[in-house]
Image 1 (cartoon, helix red, strand yellow):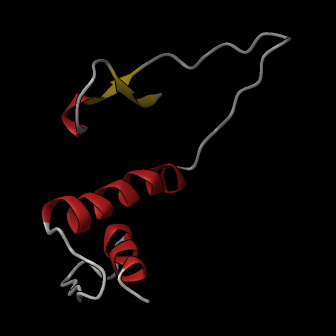
Image 2: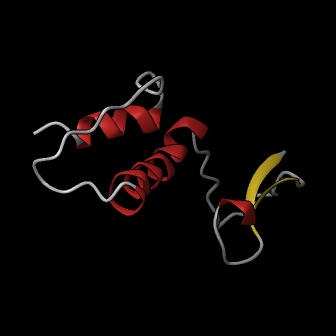
Length: 84
Protein backbone atom coordinates (compact mmCIF):
# COMPACT_ATOMS: atom_id res chain seq x y z
CA UNK A 1 0.00 0.00 0.00
CA UNK A 2 1.10 3.60 -0.49
CA UNK A 3 1.57 5.86 2.50
CA UNK A 4 2.71 9.45 2.92
CA UNK A 5 5.35 9.43 5.63
CA UNK A 6 7.45 12.02 7.41
CA UNK A 7 11.05 10.91 7.92
CA UNK A 8 12.50 14.18 9.25
CA UNK A 9 11.44 17.57 10.55
CA UNK A 10 10.74 20.16 7.86
CA UNK A 11 8.23 21.52 5.38
CA UNK A 12 6.32 19.54 2.78
CA UNK A 13 9.65 18.46 1.23
CA UNK A 14 10.09 16.17 4.26
CA UNK A 15 7.07 14.11 3.11
CA UNK A 16 7.63 11.05 0.97
CA UNK A 17 5.31 8.58 -0.72
CA UNK A 18 6.43 5.12 0.35
CA UNK A 19 5.26 1.69 -0.70
CA UNK A 20 4.84 -0.21 2.56
CA UNK A 21 3.38 -3.62 3.41
CA UNK A 22 -0.26 -3.72 4.50
CA UNK A 23 -0.20 -3.99 8.30
CA UNK A 24 -1.28 -7.21 9.97
CA UNK A 25 -3.94 -6.41 12.55
CA UNK A 26 -3.58 -8.15 15.91
CA UNK A 27 -6.50 -9.03 18.22
CA UNK A 28 -6.08 -5.94 20.42
CA UNK A 29 -5.47 -3.48 17.55
CA UNK A 30 -7.64 -1.37 15.30
CA UNK A 31 -6.96 -0.37 11.69
CA UNK A 32 -8.16 3.14 10.87
CA UNK A 33 -8.55 3.96 7.18
CA UNK A 34 -8.39 7.66 6.33
CA UNK A 35 -9.89 9.33 3.28
CA UNK A 36 -7.00 11.12 1.55
CA UNK A 37 -9.10 14.18 0.73
CA UNK A 38 -10.25 14.62 4.33
CA UNK A 39 -6.72 14.05 5.59
CA UNK A 40 -5.39 16.82 3.36
CA UNK A 41 -7.72 19.49 4.76
CA UNK A 42 -5.45 20.50 7.69
CA UNK A 43 -2.54 20.94 5.27
CA UNK A 44 -4.71 23.11 3.02
CA UNK A 45 -5.64 25.24 6.04
CA UNK A 46 -2.01 25.70 7.03
CA UNK A 47 -1.08 26.59 3.45
CA UNK A 48 -3.87 29.18 3.26
CA UNK A 49 -2.85 30.65 6.63
CA UNK A 50 0.80 30.92 5.56
CA UNK A 51 -0.23 32.61 2.31
CA UNK A 52 -2.58 35.13 3.98
CA UNK A 53 -0.82 35.86 7.26
CA UNK A 54 2.86 35.03 6.79
CA UNK A 55 3.54 35.77 3.12
CA UNK A 56 1.02 38.49 2.25
CA UNK A 57 0.80 39.93 5.80
CA UNK A 58 -2.90 40.71 5.34
CA UNK A 59 -4.29 42.87 8.14
CA UNK A 60 -7.88 43.12 9.41
CA UNK A 61 -9.95 45.30 7.07
CA UNK A 62 -7.83 44.51 4.00
CA UNK A 63 -9.25 42.59 1.05
CA UNK A 64 -7.98 39.31 -0.39
CA UNK A 65 -8.34 38.39 -4.06
CA UNK A 66 -8.03 34.65 -4.76
CA UNK A 67 -7.50 33.85 -8.44
CA UNK A 68 -7.79 30.45 -10.14
CA UNK A 69 -7.73 28.46 -6.91
CA UNK A 70 -11.32 29.11 -5.85
CA UNK A 71 -12.33 25.56 -6.78
CA UNK A 72 -9.59 23.91 -4.75
CA UNK A 73 -9.20 23.36 -1.00
CA UNK A 74 -6.62 26.10 -0.37
CA UNK A 75 -8.54 28.62 -2.46
CA UNK A 76 -11.80 27.80 -0.69
CA UNK A 77 -10.19 28.27 2.71
CA UNK A 78 -8.69 31.58 1.56
CA UNK A 79 -12.16 32.68 0.46
CA UNK A 80 -13.76 31.63 3.76
CA UNK A 81 -10.98 33.26 5.79
CA UNK A 82 -11.36 36.48 3.83
CA UNK A 83 -15.12 36.67 4.38
CA UNK A 84 -16.21 38.86 7.31
